[in-house]
Image 1 (tube, helix red, strand yellow):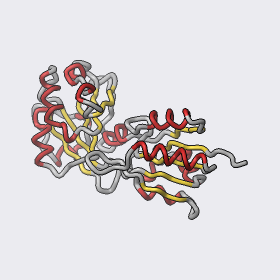
Image 2 (tube, rainbow, N blue to C red):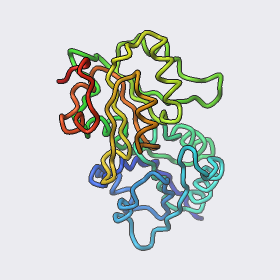
Image 3 (cartoon, one colour):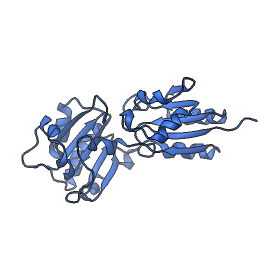
Image 4 (cartoon, one colour):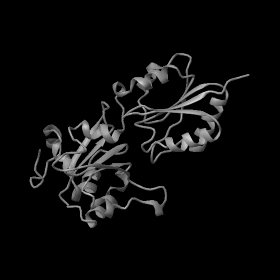
Length: 257
């Protein structure tokens, strides 16, 4: 009788293959099948064996993507066939990675699931510029939030977020930068609040923009930056290394670290 396989939801980190965890490396090395997202750096597949089947299941905002239902059906079929399955996701599977949905679906069908965390781009992107998400002088916490909700009725309450005084780390927000900017300022966040936008964090092609909230949308429109990017809003952006602040003129009224 064939034994049912197992699925590992593995976070591949922000892009730099050296930021892959040891546990993720072991899971990849032991996989019979790997379902890899579009945002994952393919260099991490160097840890897989030559016998491992790699299936591309691209997931990228604004582009044609593999339907989620198909991915879940495929994982279920491979596990039922007795295979060790790795679902390889960019960043962390439980931070805007739909890992919770996939785990629930598999467990409802009797499949063993393990979650292996990865370094989220929301952590790695600001760190790559020298920006901490918390700082005793400027921010006593940070909020991770998507730039847009699943439906019009489930959008972030930017006005409420503006009043928290916490660092805002926004995923998938580039396309909605004008709305985010306007609603945060309407909610009371000062126009001069420092902002950093980091694209392709930790990869060789990383690019970044530093500006202030009032110029977020216009500066983004004038820049080459696009998705995938992380937007960081808050006083902690003052800590960005000088080399990045000089790349985009830092408003004199904002000050520096």
